[in-house]
Image (tube, rainbow, N blue to C red):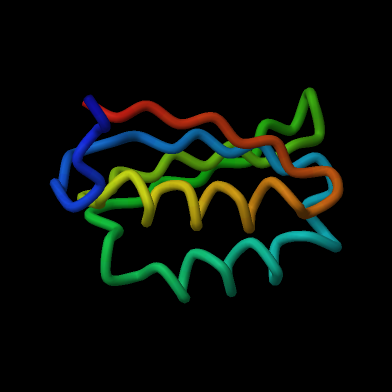
Length: 85
């Protein structure tokens, strides 16, 4: 049985940006492109590790989640993990 890709579910996307100075604009552009599925977003710098940590709550289909994480994951110095609830 194939999963239903039209069902909207809540999910969490965790993003680590290692090169904040050069990647922040690109990450923000992608998140803006997917603004219609974003419920909430929090970002904080982790100065000791010199990275930015972003958590995003989404209400999306698995296809929308895959498109978002796929685009973010193609950026150098950006790591992405997601979880659908």
